[in-house]
Structures are given as C-alpha cells and as structure tokens.
Image: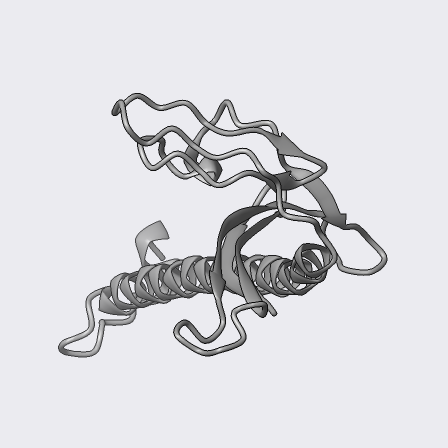
Length: 182
C-alpha cells in the first residue's frame, strides 16, 4: 500500500461556511467592548455630576445658615456714623470693623467682588454647619418708619448682609440679603 493511502480523507467544508464564525465573533466582541466602555464613561460622568450637586447643596445650606446668623449680628449692631463720599466719582471705600461696614461708596464695586477687601469675618464654623462661613454686613441707611406721621421717632435701619461658604475643592456659594431692623 502506498503511504498516501494511509491518510484519512479530509472532510469537505459544508457549503457557505469558510471561517466566517471567527470573524463574526470578533466583530461582536469589539462592539460589546465599545458599549461597555461607553457605559463606564457615562457612569463616571454621572458620578462627577452628582458629586458637584452635593458640593453645591452643602455649600448653599451652610451659607443660608450663615446668612441668618449674620442677620442676627446686624440686629444687635450699632450703626456706624461714617458716610461715603459719593460726590467726586472716585472709589473711596468706607471702613469695616468686626464685620460691620459703613455705607458703601456708590463709585466702588460691591465689596464681595473686590479681591482686596479684607473685612470678611467668620460667621459660623463646623460643627454648626458642614463648612466654614464668613461674611460681613453693611449699614445702608436709616429712614422713618411712617414718614409724615405725628411720631417720627420710630426709625428703620437697613443693612445688606453678605456671606460665603467655600467647599475646597468644589463649590463657592455667596448669598446676600437686605435686612431691616425696626
């Protein structure tokens, strides 16, 4: 017998199948991998957004508590007598002491926007609130409660209260209110 006749006959491939299963499986594997990577990136982005929302909420709640506390400080304060010079068009900011500021000069930017302003004082700190809160309050004006009435002795004092809470790194929330004391 000849050596070539000892080999078993080679099976013939069924019609229509010539190695397509491997290529199809690899394509499906690549598609599944891309879907998983996209879902992972989406989940990571959602986690960052949720963290930023939490940072802002904590900073806002701390600033809100600080605003109420600073309003109490304004209620117990004695208005300063210094008045701004609004006649020359030149910014000359009035003084501040212990968080209470004299009326602002209309020619100056708001104090909270001025990077050189150093009158911020601690208003609240942990454990009262999750973040430290600092602020100041400005005396704005005094006016009679009922102008034209027979009893002009009742005066109303108006204050502007500004506070900020900073979550480092993260959100900064600045709140401001107009507060009147009778």
